Image 1: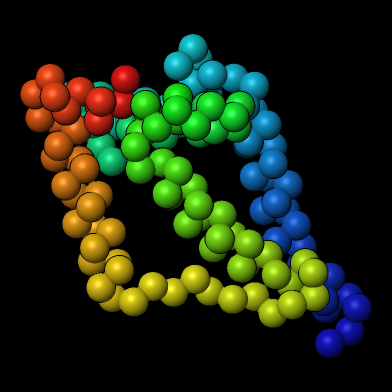
Image 2: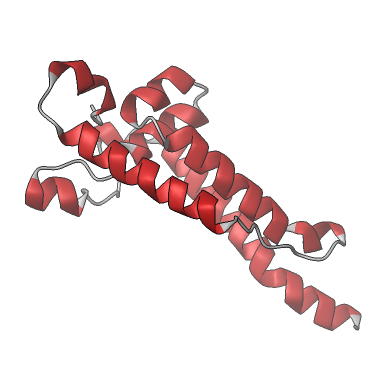
Length: 138
């Protein structure tokens, strides 16, 4: 593979890193709870229900500022989701350091278990019981 071809293969990855860095910098600087360019959650707007991702932007803002407890208060599953996304992204970015890209693969049982956890979390965070208020995206 020639130098030009290798550079062309790396360009999308470099652009993705630059784009993610820009979005992360904006999200760290602008609290989604106070404004910004972020759209409202369709589930929350149309149905009045928290989807599994509700609170994710506010939680990511808190994570970028080093506030893990604040992030957990907005969305309990967020740190797990961020960790999985970070590992998948790191494997995809391996060509930037001269290694072949890899794909993060989970066994079927893990995917099914994750879907069950997300579905249960979604139902529980929308039940009107004071004992479950900590699951809401407040």
